[in-house]
Amino acid sequence: MRTIVVTGSASGIGAATRKRLIAQGERVIGVDIRDADVQADLSTASGRRDAIARVEHLCEGRLDGLVTCAGLMGLPSRPGRVLAELNFFGTIEFLAAARPWLARGTRPAVVAISSNSTTAMPGLPVELTRLLLDGDPAEAIAYADKVGSPDAYAATKLAVAHWIRRQATKPEWAGAGITLNAVAPGKTETGMLAEGRADKTYGPLIDAFPVPVGRSAQPEEIAALIGFLLSPDARFICGSVYFIDGGTDAQLRANDFPAPFPAPRPKQA
Image (tube, rainbow, N blue to C red; front, side):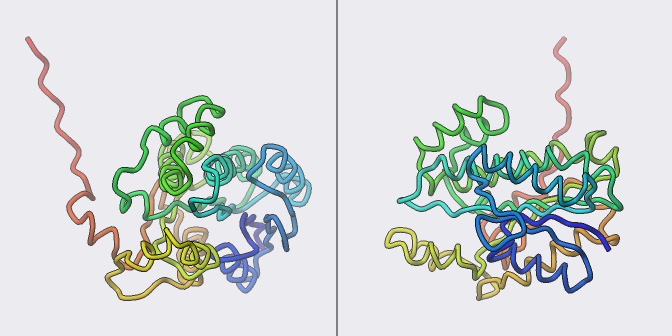
């Protein structure tokens, strides 16, 4: 029996993932603001520190898997800083803290939740993504407030995907036997989606979002992909971002991926 931590375990994709893993015989430590083994607010620095300390105690410093599902949708009424704190820092700080625990685990694997909004949203504020990855955290959080949470959502999820890609191949991750991958869900029938639909500004945009297969995903479908990426069958998958969005990304950006590796420019004489 492996021990796997799932953040955002009380609802949506996190709850479906927790249920699936338990049914497979895994021990799951759930982290959420309510109804979880570790109840903490990951949108605050103190909440993250508390959650990390309590998880370390429960897993006794040894972990076999981590799934970072905790996150919020960007809504006009929600401050952008909350998304920067929860969606990005609530993910990467947990990953950084868990790395030594995972290094002691059996076939350790990490799955982070990104979003297909990273490629489907025009005019994404890439400066926020840059600040989250490479800038001062306080400056990034302030900038998230400036752009507002509807725009900050995609930028934070892009930063998560890029962080996974940057870190996955490093000696302390792949070199230590820990696989890092990300999943980018599309429109999924969760409480988060219902919250968005209830917003007068955001709701019509959600309903108009194209999904070629003709329906939204169920959280259990996303959990099935997460479960595979945690499994022994996925040990050769490293640094990938999996879109599971009913074809939205393919419809909107068919020729953008895979992108060919550009030939090096000849040196000037």
